[in-house]
Image (cartoon, rainbow, N blue to C red; front, side, top):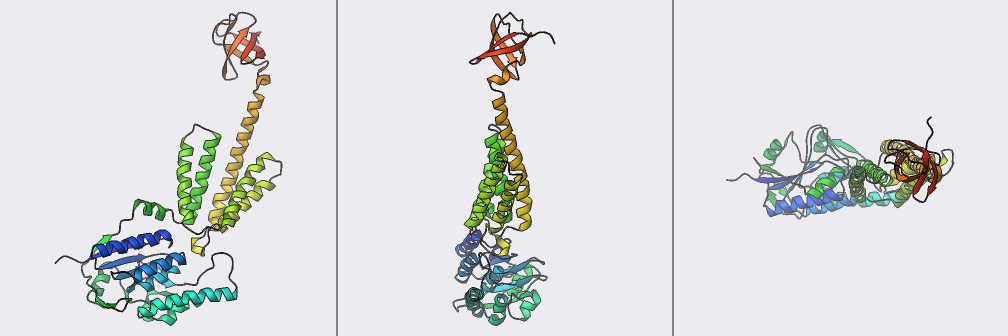
Length: 407
């Protein structure tokens, strides 16, 4: 008889829209292959409640039993991760893990008492509806929302928030084999998991990329690095590499940031900060514009993502990225401005009385090398190749020169 098959999918990052996509596809794969169960490995700080709602709705409607397992030791299923754990047919934890602390956080700003009550009541009703169906302690589960209570694996088992503690997946499947569970719709089903073959869910290329950059802190770093690379390419056309790499990094940063809810005030502050940094070079502000631009970008980064703390950009990231970006931007813009001014100095008037070298015989016309450039020239007297000349006037794109006196 063939070994039962279990489809395993990892939730080891912030819970975001890409997490919904991965778990949905894993559940579909399990149903299509007639798998014995789906194993959702949890090690997450939490994430977006909207994404968690979508995932839990997929889990409770799954045709295949779902086992949520907080692993490895030292891992956690915190905040929104607790909802995923409680929604599964079997809630399991490895030794040395923890769960809970599910108090909702307002997307922007602080909640007043009435608003907090409404949000907590909504989240509590949602959680109680799942927990009671799974035969867990609904009153204690609600405390993770009301009081941000958290539990070790032993506390969670003793308080009937989870079904089992297992040191590893092999032991987990052996302990669950033959157990009868009650599905969310009330139907009874017996698990057959002993000696199960674990088939890892293989994310698509898109899911891999978005999952890899789903941390908004990494996304912000990629976004700023990409913008800097594109800016370098615009200021020094032909370098190619900064433009190509900058474009790739910028788009990856956008892919990371835009899958999360954006606060447009934060985005506006980022744009304002960049503008102020550019103006710092144009106007004499004694650093006021530069400092203001840096502060604006830091605030913009902190406000950019609407969501709980675990999905926001950290202050340390905002400072460590924005301050160097500000310094590099001001430096590059300064170089660009100076280069443009140097071009003005190197106008026709700037070539007068410059010394150069005849590259061909001037009898009277030929080619001279002046100030790093080749010019057509007419000499007042014959000059041999290699002879030194001095520019006396400019006629359109042709120089008029004379033999230089030996210096």
